[in-house]
Length: 146
Image 1 (cartoon, rainbow, N blue to C red):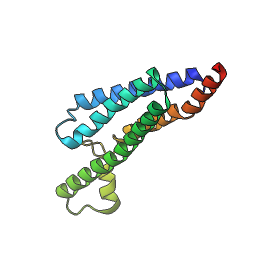
Image 2: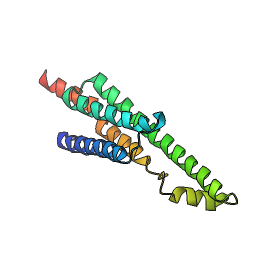
Image 3: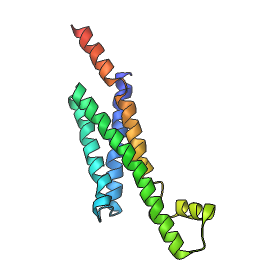
Image 4: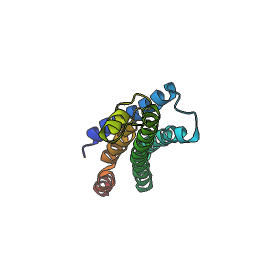
């Protein structure tokens, strides 16, 4: 991957991580241990971004990739948790609601937004794109110097 493209993608990833962190803080998404998980992951992912820029070695890239995978998993789990909370709320409000009507209401709920955690998965996928071929490019650069 072109060095400039990788830098731009890394910048976009970093902006996304910081923006998501700020948004969650502004929404007071830190009331319990489960709500702290995305905040901690975003901080760790930002640290992994900094590490891959400063010291792009094999272990740093692997740690970065692992962190991006954790973001993807957290995003998918978060979608499930938000959706389940919405389903529980909708069934309390209207016990007769079921099937597609219940799913539709749960997906359209404003609090918690069912698909909002997908942004974590999206950031994780972008991070994996950033890391793609990173070690291969490093090896080629090292070979050229020798």
